[in-house]
Image 1: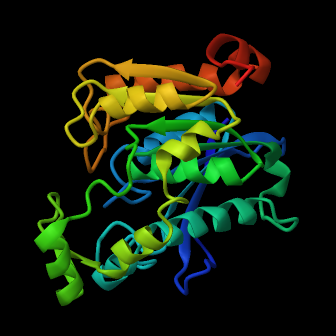
Image 2: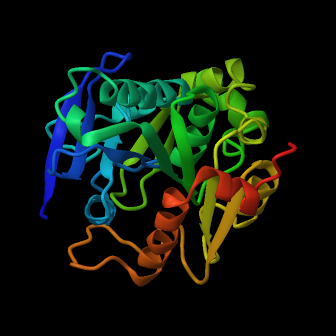
Length: 297
């Protein structure tokens, strides 16, 4: 059966900017387990091989949802370009967690357009890089999440903030800039980003959130990741109560995908990752607890 794709659906968020969503599924009028994918920092839902990944999940019988965080810097008119850099500067972790909640709530609405296609008793989160950390924090507080998968997720959302004189300079100027290595744009971070982090430091603590997880958690990382240290995967594995660790040999931060990705096949290392993600999502929860978790925790 062909995969149905509905792209660039606008839903309302809590922060005065729309959230752009894509859904991929087989239109067989049968309920399917849901997968919601969260992109990472300086990422977007249409980056690289994410469309091909969505098709692969849909072919496997999942209802796959991916979305742009409302303040990721793209616009509804140009979902693949960072044209709203002021929105990028106004982004913070609270906004991203609220955006993810808005997407979850949208799927669960009685009048959700594809309601007949979704099994709301099986909602899985997958997050790449920073999106993985956001997914961990959300999975602790959103009890409707049944499985969690993180690709190359960091363990400390505060580690990249400046300190000392650099922090004082940022506070004084109100903005600092980061270069987007792909587009060479100077992207702003307004000081509110750090302030929001400091005010919610406990909520954004990835370690304490991971330790509180009560759903099966698959942790995947490439051994050649130069963006997020492979040691992060070991920490997550140690902290997460019901966890499986998958190290992908010689894979980089995006598992060898590039942007744009116009090939019919996924990169070999990315396909290897997905081939091991599906059995994890399909296994009975008790079997995962018995194999990966300590039920006495």
